[in-house]
Amino acid sequence: MTGLPNRALFMDRLKRLAEKAKRKPDNLFALLFLDLDQFKLINDSLGHLVGDQLIVAFARRLEHELRSTDIVSRFTEGHALARLGGDEFTVLLDDLQHASDALRIAERIGEALKQPFNISGNEIFASVSIGVSLSSTGFERPEDLLRDADTAMYRAKSARRGSVELFDSEMRASAVARLQMETDLRQAADRHEFCNWYQLIVNLKTAQVRGLEALVRWRHPSNRLIEPGEFISIAEETGIIIPLGRQVLKQACRQLYAWQQLDASETPLMVSVNLSRKQLLQTDLISDIREELDDVGIDPSCLKLEITESMVMLNPERAKTTLRELKALGVRIAMDDFGTGYSSLSYLHKLPLDALKVDRSFVSQIESDAEKLEIVRTIITLAHNLGLEVIAEGIETREQMFILRELGCELGQGYLFSRPLDADAATDLLIAEPVW
Image 1 (tube, rainbow, N blue to C red):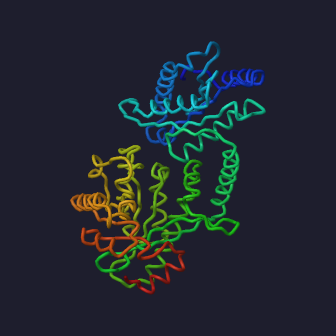
Image 2 (image 1 turned 180 degrees about the vertical axis):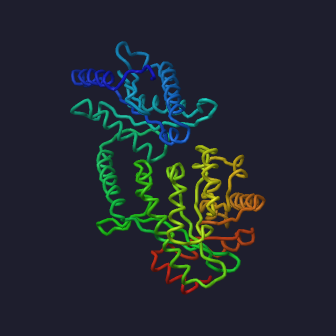
Image 3 (image 1 turned 90 degrees about the vertical axis):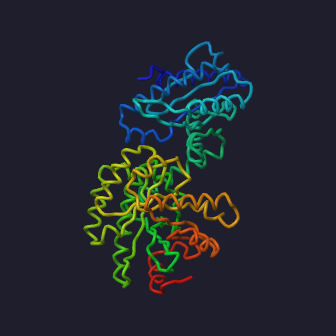
């Protein structure tokens, strides 16, 4: 498809360089492993034809960037660039003077590939994560260098998409641990080891509890309670996020029904559940949610689904269609982390939203940072002009609460009101009707 050498030709070239390095230990070469970030999501949202066109455009830009690199121009045989398959590419750099040469080239390639691609009328931003392995780190087989570069690439992707990482021995141990984590996660989904913890969402004017946000935890067989920061990214990459998301939704709806039986207030409690990128692209998402609501028997308006800006901006039209179908079910929709992702102002008024959530990174500094205060004020004003409710995250002090209330923010959550609690502790807190 791209006209580039395939894996077989690449491995032949790599073996020859490895043999040369063993004859001449001073000969330094590097292997770059490149992987397009979020390519599967691009494929799923825009279609495989656009995905294929992006791969070809990516290959051409990569070739152009390598041709303009002095070091690569010294190749006199074989190929420096290859496509292993899918969205994975490799580059061999021979006759290097210093390890920094490989890093410099990798960073240059990464910057060039951050520029948008225009594919069939779609402007696509597709950064690349790059792992680098050096012959000087030692290897027994040529395949070891490919494995090491692949490991470094995953480190780059998990640390910050679009970055470059140089392999070191500690990464190998981390890779083994990650593989074990993935295996354990798959078993966890089958064994229903995921459980919800809940954080109160409070009306800032009346002090009444309006709802709770479901926050997933993993009760590992070792009896360790693992927070999502340790496993959600792996669950996303592997697709485990789909069964995990179903379990979170099911638990949250059933728990909400139980709480509503205890709650005698005129305004029924709500529960908020976060949707992942892959869930938003699920073809059966709507039917899954409809089935769960029917089974449990709760009012759809008591379920609030939270999405992020970056999820929407990956494919705004697809997201808009899905969100409208969700709204047709009667559920409520909130945009989480507003102001921290891609700019979605041009789409915001087109989306069927009910609420905006102000990110904790703004809330935590509104007492001391005038700029953050103005950002929060602007978000609240924008939301109200669009007829949306505002929820502030990460409220930890009474001063923050008072400022947000004066700015017109309706709802808040954070450690000031409660830390995340398991279902039993949250029930006790609801019965006690907490006030501040």
